[in-house]
Image (cartoon, rainbow, N blue to C red):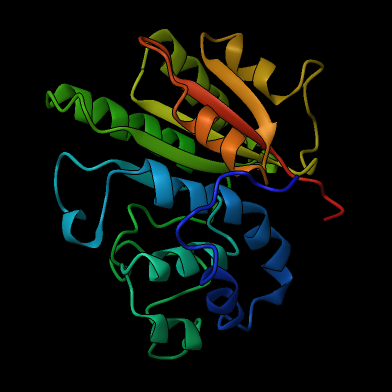
Length: 231
């Protein structure tokens, strides 16, 4: 579906992504996330290169950290990292690894790539913010559907729903790669534990923006972004 919402970085991202070479195996993983990342950073997240340490910033956690080319390109497009860094992915002196490193890359909140870690970390982040009285920042976490095969996610889903963790939004890229699945679809796995959920075309920027900003009071929110696996 062609987007009806023009985002700010659309003209730059293709050339930036092309500068990242050496991880072609994970190319499909990277390209499945690009539209969600673009809408988040262009329209939704309250964070800039100048506010990466501001306690009131929104947090974005990339659980789907394998194949981070699109993530690095978006960070460069928004000024978090220099464009030139993209030319040396995983080089000897490069700060850009095949998995993002929060200690090396400005704007990265967690080191990620091992499947199943990100949602639990996002729940902990949201709980920590709430305990400190920081009620304005939102926590967004991006997962792949295959990550939901990992049992740690289900404890996080249940806990977030039971505690009404309203500052949390999870985004699942659904490209039909999960092993098990659920009879009612991915959203049903979350809503049974008290989450609200929207399922949208993962290439439609208007639908993504509406879903990403469609969270409700006293409940965590899920956005399922469906990606055609043949695309």
